[in-house]
Image (cartoon, rainbow, N blue to C red; front, side):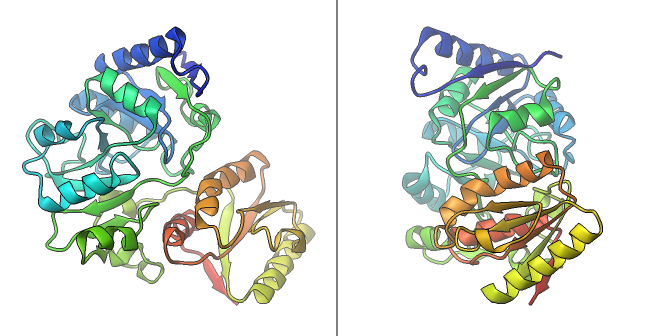
Length: 353
């Protein structure tokens, strides 16, 4: 299959060529095909959410387990009611506060949503992205686009179209290139079918932000660092995610001890002939000795680390490093989402020093 690529920027977004490309992409989705597209979080792999065959194609293209539910993307608030049994007050409050944006809500599904899209569950995950290309595509596609991240299952999610092409080129009909995703981590997922709203995946919308709107909000203990041996409530979170090709280990502790230990490990790797990688911060970037050293930004700026993490993991793959060590990051605010992804990418390998 030849995968068509079209680039949409702020400069050409309103041109006839760009509008025609989005319309063509929408027609592909209506016909049961697959289109990768930018969102503010990461690139999504879109199919018709109400077409069981489209969802099956998404699973096949990604190599994704079929019990891992897909998120349904909508472009208007009024499109939520037809695909859920009811809209609780909590959903109305969150929608008013955070939609369009990087928040996914889990609700009881209506019969319009096939089980192939929801991984066989009676619930459906829904979000309304803020990216303008995504909104235009969803509208052209008929209003309901199922879209997990546009990567091969288990790999770091793509924040650039070139990584989509790397993983899925030749497997899908079209890629809309919208440049680098501005957030860089997947949406926050909150389950509204529980007695107390529960975060099943941390993201840019933090627990503190949700609590200001809803009051009491819980976090699924399985997604916390100390809960790695607990079965997660979200089926997709039980699978290996975000992993680079090289083995990744997080080194946690005071800065001096972390730098010293990573340098010891990197020197030993070099003696064995291995190519090594280090995920550092701006403050520690010049203190490491390794084959490839990447900064995840200013330690105090969690949003910057979130935006850069997946790109860094992909660049280590491109450099063909054999082993990677990463500093640990703050586990609060958006830092919780960063550490959640980093821990899963490392297979929960953490060395404390």
